[in-house]
Length: 187
Image (tube, rainbow, N blue to C red; front, side, top):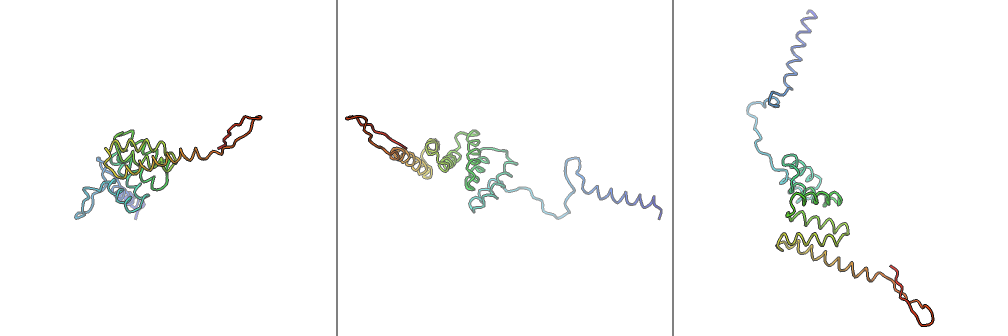
């Protein structure tokens, strides 16, 4: 065979192969073979993420929530869910940031307030957590037993903290002069 004919055949074959990988004018790839089932609806990433959270698969839940963010945007539900997953993984600073962003999107979203309170408790910021739980409790109208319990624990911890702060001082009586005494305290 002549070299020009071989070159022509090779070019035609290569262009035929290249045609299969191209997208059409609408950004669609090649059509699936006949008889292939079409996927019309996908499961919401939030639903998948919630199921994964229930089964303790927090890393996979984050992936599902990020997929939901890709589909829906970073709305209050997605941000709160991502914050909750990060809380479960012990990523407290990330969780706090995500939950605060969720509250900025919707300041009446009770789950974000509650979970932010949990994060703050884990960060030993019980006073701030107490205020956050009060907000969650008020927004929820006292309906949730979990929020009520969280608020109770935060109140108890802040009161214990105040009592312990008073009790952590060592007092000593020091004589100053012949009849004067001074009470000294050291933390």
